[in-house]
Length: 130
Image (tube, rainbow, N blue to C red; front, top):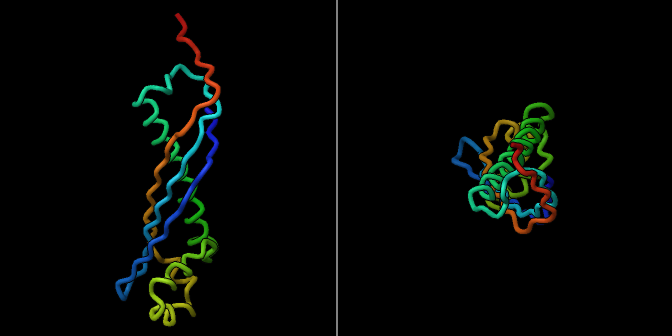
């Protein structure tokens, strides 16, 4: 299968309890099925839902790897989570900005990804061999 991601949005919601910083990240994306060469019938609701869940899982895995690399390997907030934190907690930001990369490196990130297929293109469905 080939999927073209046509739209995505990401919402970063920082949380702070005075001791710990964490982020809830919601990613919502839409895509078009460009090509399918399998026996599944994409028009069936269960098949479509399974494909959407697979896409969401793949995106979550890739984003998780990138976050892990930024936090653990590089120790740098390349995603600008600090901007979202600063907007929500301007007073607390003054205390944390001097060592933000360390704070970011230790922050928990909760990812939620939702994927939706909108259109389907070429479907070269294979028939089951007898």
